[in-house]
Length: 81
Image 1 (cartoon, rainbow, N blue to C red):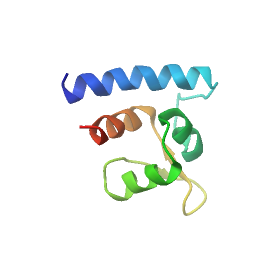
Image 2: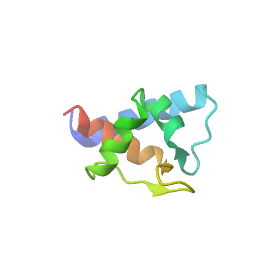
Image 3: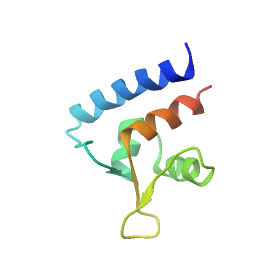
Image 4: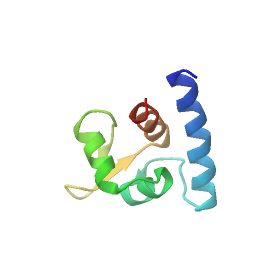
């Protein structure tokens, strides 16, 4: 399975989990919600962001990151390769 295929598969899985958790993923989601959807610790997402593996935007606080579900799926797919 290629990285693109696994990212697409992961995106579907993350979307399904977000739907079950009733998290609106039409825009960007907060770091805690993103961590719940990805089954990782929020600090893992911060580390991925620091290393350039994951793009995010800053919200009101210094550590308040906002993520797109598509970017989360790509980062998680490359983390397991």
